[in-house]
Length: 249
Image 1 (cartoon, rainbow, N blue to C red):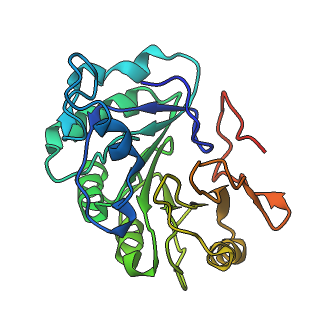
Image 2 (cartoon, rainbow, N blue to C red):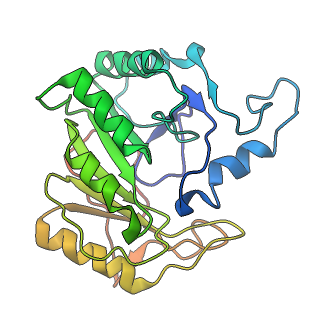
């Protein structure tokens, strides 16, 4: 678990699973894969097996050791709801999150139907704990099914990560959505993001009363273009959460 991260909308990361496989265009230039594969074959390195899907049960209890409240991004280097992660292991991750209720946990997936089904089995007709936020990644207007499946999931807080934004989203039904993050792609093969695509999402959030967080313009380096949109920084959160770090303006 990393007690520091450059991700603006969280305080720390926790990776009980690492590695993944690609399922849509948003995965094409995956930063986690690019980082992990640098260390493939390095004896003793945490990423000795590169970006191969790997369960890490020794990390399951890590958040319990952090007594100061943090906002924690779960599996920044994987997807907890990958089809090859057993339900029993996902359940153990949720056991830890439910116990460590002084933290706020953020889970992000592209496997939205698997997350929806798991949450239904775990929480039934009610909503999950408010300190466990469940989100889906949506990179363009072709991925709206993920939004609908999230809306059908009994998550405590529901959010969208529209990053990397690689095409116009179009109209979004934001019913039941609490938070939207938008960001451009970064890295050596970063695809450009049109400012009108960003405004399109922001304006719909304003109209719907949904918290909006603009993470970055992107580019070769994540911070290259800054975070300002139309003369201001957008750093809204869906609820007041205790944070050990405030996103840089």
